[in-house]
Length: 88
Image (cartoon, rainbow, N blue to C red; front, side):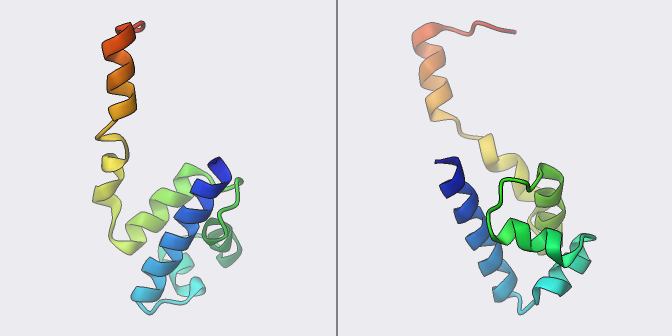
């Protein structure tokens, strides 16, 4: 499941790049990373870190959307209702 999610993320980043008519090298430069590092994100490699994702999202104009990743947590909310919150 994790590999599938990373692959999907990579495909979406690639699509966002292509919609902006940017090459991999251009987007990597805007994000302040090497092309090789950027390609790892597009390929959904597990070695990609959260910092790279933040840099690329900023270069694509999506930095403000990052906090939305866990804004809705229906599974966590359901578990909290059933079991209560265990930690503070």
